[in-house]
Image (tube, rainbow, N blue to C red; front, side, top):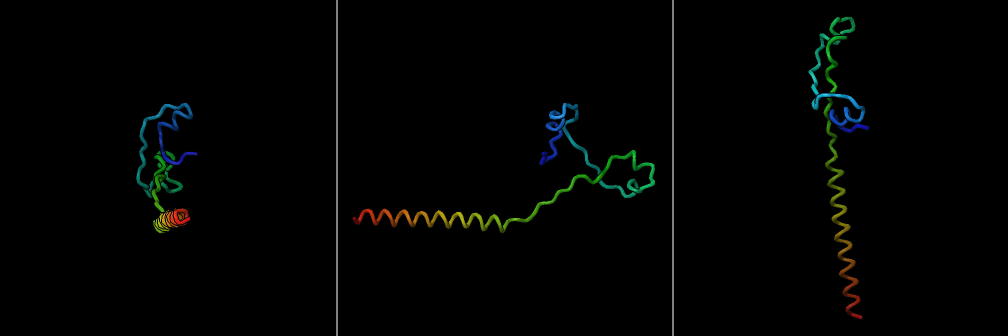
Length: 87
């Protein structure tokens, strides 16, 4: 699976020669009509879709949970050391 558009790596994997870059044109409504003679000539535009999902809350909850677990582990260790020193 390809998770990014790495033209050089994809070309090497499939033993193709390709330029090490990718050109993505803007979508032209006139050339995408069904009966347009340019529809089969022009490159297919609009393939680059960039969407970033917003999962900052999940990351914040994860890191704060990990921090609380470290604090909890430190409390347990300090308590056990104090208990061992008293005996």
